[in-house]
Image 1 (cartoon, rainbow, N blue to C red):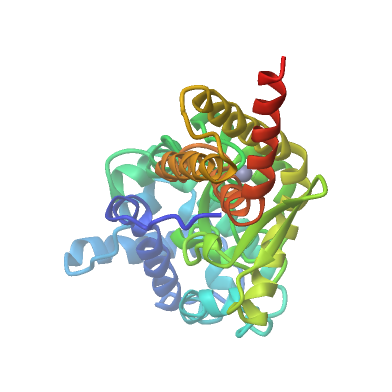
Image 2: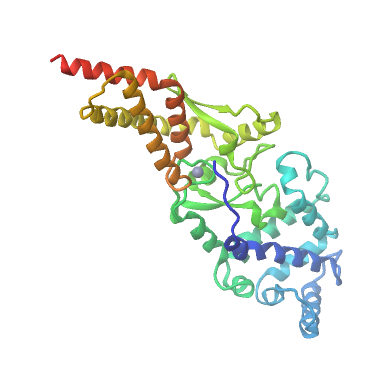
Length: 353
Ligand SMILES: [Zn+2]
């Protein structure tokens, strides 16, 4: 709902994943090249690595990891594919945003039979390698992916739904482009989004609809507002929004089933908000001389503005802030007269007793 700022801290934590993948894929292009499987392949690979390490001029940061983990087996597998994976990876990374906008496709990127190997190898990168101590000690200090979750769940709502306030144990790292279909991006930093378990594990899973908004690039708040009418929460686009962006927002809503979820969990908050406003103004009205409808309207406006200011401070921290802020705008724009008439009616009824 709100854009996640890509901070220096995030870059420092998981930025190196990109470097490591690029280095590995670059290394895959070098000799020895394997076409046909042989039992000596891993041995040959290790000889090459030993030479590189002794050479001292090489900057490959993953060399230590290869020797001590299964990475060597997976590098062999990548070498059997026999294509320039480094170029493929770079093409995808460079076009990541275009892919989200559907202006570029990865359709012809994978050579026949390579997807299975890529899914297995990059699956290993994500499931084992980056969660392991040897890898993390080589590229940093601690388990970076865990720290990313810690960093992004601290006093934050889920960047997808804004319904759930995140907590470390109820969050997970989502592959925005699912790793089963886009294996090359399994540990590409901009493809890793920390989200609530409901959004990631139970609702989105391996689905994707294109074109789509992405929380590292877009602030959904800029494109639409919520409207609460006839007991339904609907979304309306701001006037200048292009058709292309409307599609991207609509797909984001579809992917995370936001309309249904907002209608389930958001309405109660809005009803409560309106009741609180009425109650507060009603209470204030006891202590003011001028109980005219104009003056009551003024008090309601002030009450709405105060609340707007307070809720704004809680954006991305407290849940459903966008929904509540949009509703306050709606009340201010369309319902002040109705609310003031209601209060004046209540005052008159009470004094008549
Ligand atoms: Zn969520």
